[in-house]
Length: 116
Image 1 (cartoon, rainbow, N blue to C red):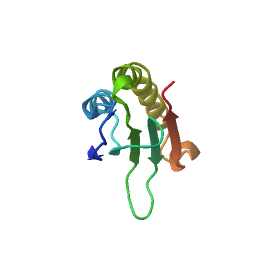
Image 2 (cartoon, helix red, strand yellow; image 1 turned 60 degrees about the vertical axis):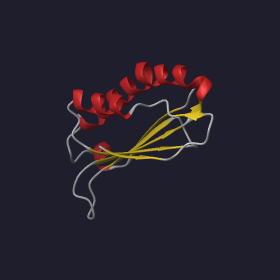
Image 3 (cartoon, rainbow, N blue to C red; image 1 turned 180 degrees about the vertical axis):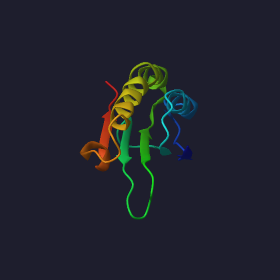
Image 4 (spheres, rainbow, N blue to C red; image 1 turned 120 degrees about the horizontal axis):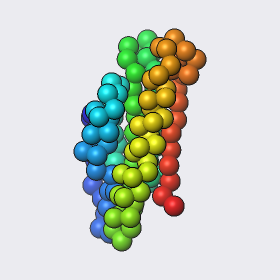
């Protein structure tokens, strides 16, 4: 998994531990190229599943996560680890369960979760 992590302003924290995401991907035997970008804005967690194309011969995951206020970081981390990552792994396993030539697996798919 390739990781890009933006520097945060004071008062913000990343609730997603890249190691927790990597463990879920490897523990689920998910073999797609993953790119994680941790930034300041946007959704708490979102992922694009990209099928192979003429420029890239393999499936890819483009994952973005957002920072939260430090006061909410522990609560957001628990939410991600207990809810979001298991839901994400199940979503991805569902896509990969289809045959490579199925319409679901040949099209871009999207998963997102916001912090309540």
